[in-house]
Length: 136
Image 1 (tube, rainbow, N blue to C red):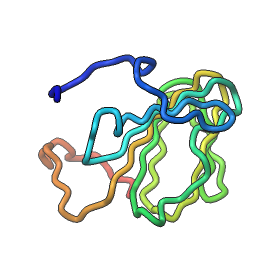
Image 2 (cartoon, helix red, strand yellow):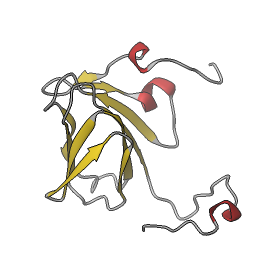
Image 3 (tube, rainbow, N blue to C red):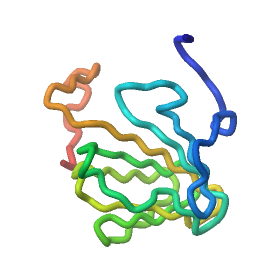
Image 4 (spheres, one colour):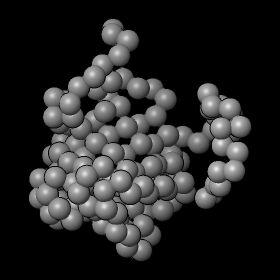
């Protein structure tokens, strides 16, 4: 097994085309990550569903979404949030119902998820974050 890989997103296999046409690239599965989930979604057209409505009550995981190009409209517990390119949406509460729809063709969304743990240890030192506020 190689120690690293570097590919263009389009070179990866598409797992499933969600309705009505966004491509789902299963990054976590393809690269075999075991510490977190990672997926990319690319809309073929405006109106494509990027993230189907769901919550993570069953899994308990936290999720982070990053719109890397285009624009998306998120719905979070019924509240609408416009997310242009380079916009981040963080969902720490697993019970939050969430979904996202592309507002432009080519909108690309990265999604990361993982289980919260009390013993998570960052490789960064606390001094790196001195003066940086937390939102949660």
